[in-house]
Image 1 (cartoon, rainbow, N blue to C red):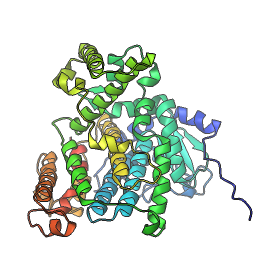
Image 2 (image 1 turned 90 degrees about the horizontal axis):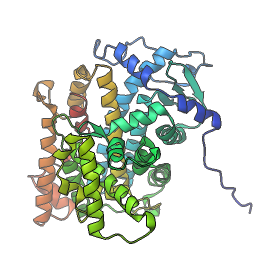
Image 3 (image 1 turned 90 degrees about the vertical axis):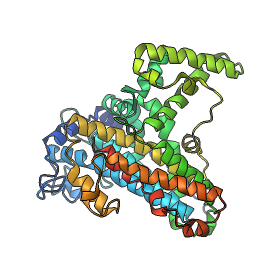
Image 4 (image 1 turned 120 degrees about the horizontal axis):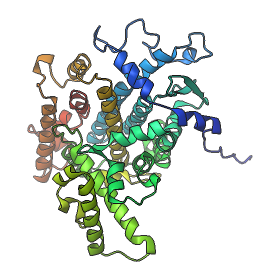
Length: 449
C-alpha cells in the first residue's frame, strides 16, 4: 500500500506578507463615517454591490469587480455584524453544553472564533472570501492575496497582521484597554526596558489565540462535526457546566464606560504575573511567592506613575501571587489535541470575541456611528427573544445583563442544593435555562454607548 504523503502546513507567501504589512484600517473608518446606517432600516443601500455579500465575481478580475470604496464599506459593515454573529455562535455553544451535547458545543464555539477573527480582519481592512482574498492599504487600494480557503486564510492573515502590520497591530492593541490604557502600554509602563515585541499586539494576540491553538480547534471541530460522536470521546459534565457558565457571567459584567472591566482586570493581572516571572527568572533560579509579590509591587508602582487611573484597581488584586487564575483564562490555555470537554474552545472564543468587540467599538466610535445603531440592535433584541417588543428595551441596555447573572446564580444554588442531573435542573421552575446561554445579549450593551 502506498504510504500517504503528509501535506505541508499552509503558509503565506512573501508577497502576501508584504501586502498584509500595508493593511490599514483608515479606509474602513472613513467608509463607516460615510455610511448612514439605519437610513432605510439597514446597513447598506439595497443597490449596494455587496448587499448580498462578496463572491468570486467581485474580485478585480471578475465580471462584477467591486470598487475600492464599496469594498471598504463592506468591511465597515462586516466588522460589527461578524462580531454579533460570533456572540450568537457562542450562545449556541453554551446551549449545546447545557443540554449535554459537547460535540456540538465545540463545533459552534469554533465558528464563534472564526467569526471573531473575521470581524477583526474586517475592522483592519482585510477580507477572506474563499475564492479570493485581499486587504486595503492606507490609500484604499486593493491588495490581492493568495487564494487560500477561508478557514486557512483567516488564521494565517490574523496571525501575521497582529505582529507585522503597523495599523493592524495598533488596532488590536487598542482593542483591549483598561481605564483608558491599552494592555501593551500597561506592560511597557511596568517594564520599560522590554523589547517592542513584549508590548506589541502580537504579544497580546499570541497569548490569546496563537495559530497552533486555532489549527487544533479546527482539527478537533472537524471530528466533532463530521464523525460519529463515539469516535471522539467528549464529556459534558453538568457540574463543570454550572461552574463555567457562572464564572462566565460573573466575568462579563459590564461597568459604566467599560464593557469588559472584570475580564480585562483578570487579563492584565495574568499578563503582569507572566512578565514578573520572566523578569525574575532570567538567571534561572526558582522563585518564591515573596519575590514574585515584591516584583509585582514594583511593577504596580511604575504603572501608577504613568497611568494614575490604574490605582482604582487595588494593589492586592495585582500583587497577591496566591490568587488563582480565573477559570476562563485557565481553560483557554488548554491546547490538548483531543480535549475531553468543550471548555477550552468556549473560553478561547470568549477571549477572541472580546478583542473583536473592542476593535468594532473603536471603529464605530472613530466614525461617529456608535449612537446610530438602534435600528440594528432593536431588531436583534426582538428577533432573538431578548424582549417581546422593542418598547420593552431598557434605556440602559446593560440592564439586560442582570437576567443572565441571576439565572446563573439560581442554577448554581439549585445544583448545590442537590439538583445534580440535567433532568432535575430542567424540572426546577426557579431556573431559566434559555438565559444561561444568551451571550448574544452582550452585543446590546457593547454597541449602544
